[in-house]
Amino acid sequence: MAATQPQSTEFPYSLTISLPLPSHRLASSALRALEVDAELSPLVRRDFALKCADTQDEAADGDEGKTVLETTYMATTNRMLRVAVNGFMESLGVVLGVMEELDVDVLEEESKA
Image (cartoon, rainbow, N blue to C red; front, side):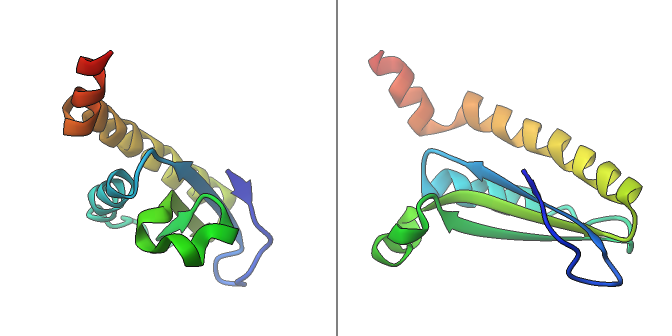
């Protein structure tokens, strides 16, 4: 997680969370699952992006190299930022738990061990 400098006078508080995942498919699935729930407060904005773990490999790998889910929150107050990020972390925990329990690739890896 990285706090960023204020970029907007309307939303001066921001935080970027970078979550590396094992594959592009899992990162993309997490993004799609999390972006369904819109932010409830007009005082908070959230953006998602898929990034490469190594920025030097971004052009060479294409979409398959994008395994990092980057979530940027912007809010009008630090309290609103904290509340939004706490809710996001709860949702993220559910998504990752489901992936761990139900993902086909994860099950295949466990059966090999």
